[in-house]
Image (tube, rainbow, N blue to C red; front, side):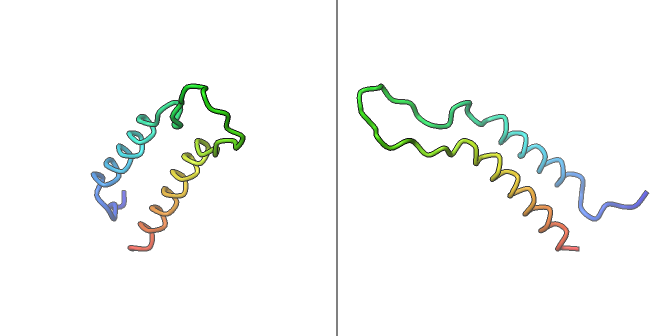
Length: 69
């Protein structure tokens, strides 16, 4: 079996941080207020972009680790 180029502890720490970030995401990220105003502009749908940001960060990290070889 080949020896790993980077320590296992870095991989475990990265995986722990990744799953901790997923676990602490609130079910509804936008703050809700009483219905006493008349908003004609719809709210920005940013909840769907959280997963995209996590995926982009993971890809960036993988490329960064491969570039250090």
